[in-house]
Image (cartoon, rainbow over all chains, first blue to last red; front, side, top):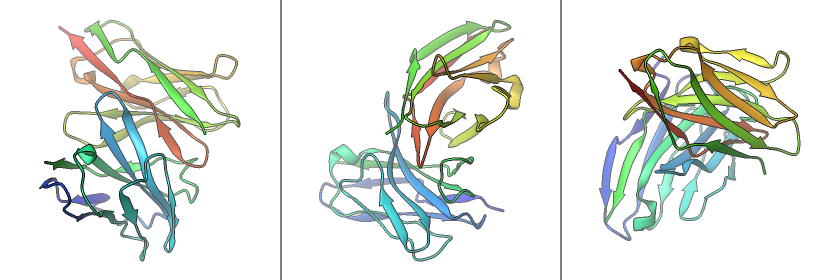
Length: 115
Length: 110
């Protein structure tokens, strides 16, 4: 199993550009989530999904969109990038449908810089 | 919503010394509690978790944590630090979704 994979590893955007961060898992997990990691703030939940066709907002959803058309994939879209979105983004998945009671498995991260 | 406070953003110990990383949580219902470790330029890896049952939880690499409901704490310990333990450690609390603390960076001096 590849586990949780994320692409790209690094990305530089200009303010106002859009892009999609890709996340895929091959463990047949129902629950998937996106976090951003900023120095001194830990990981903050952006969006999560408890299964295909179902998504919900986390702590910091503004400026981000998600969709879940398949169990395997959970892309994160930045519609109009802002410097405040410079961060490291982690995707995670869990076998628990609630995401609360079971281990989350993390991808290697995408480091995004917005100029 | 639930929340986590990690006391001390940076902890430094000597090799062979006790490691103690502190975590307090807030939750209106019994939560699940986790400790994750992050090595430089990598994702997070689970160290241990508490769901129900025994309050002393043992994890990988010799770490353990004790759930104390009366103190709303879940501190992480290791009797003897090793150089390879140097990393950032995150405590997390989960009810319907998982919330992380700000992290504690552990430095191990030779």
